[in-house]
Length: 104
Image (cartoon, rainbow, N blue to C red):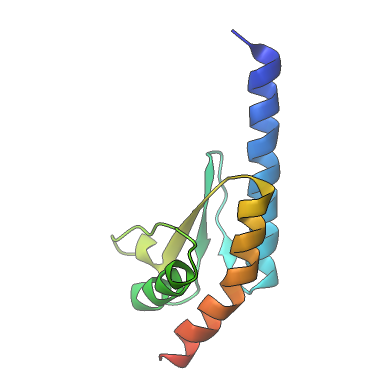
């Protein structure tokens, strides 16, 4: 019943989704449309590559998820969160992608 708080939280989620889309775009990934508190990022290859990106993020202390059913397994799932968490994700993603590409 607390509509002002609900609107505040919804605005934060909307802003986080936009930030995640921007981070994805800056790193050559495609953000899938989302109306939830997370965004799926298409890693542009197969599930093996997406898993390597996921592992590279986890190695840097960034926890993300990944669907394991084809064809969604080519994506990683990024939850909306505070700006500090999104900044950490943005800093870690380029190295995770580079590591995944060099493992091919």
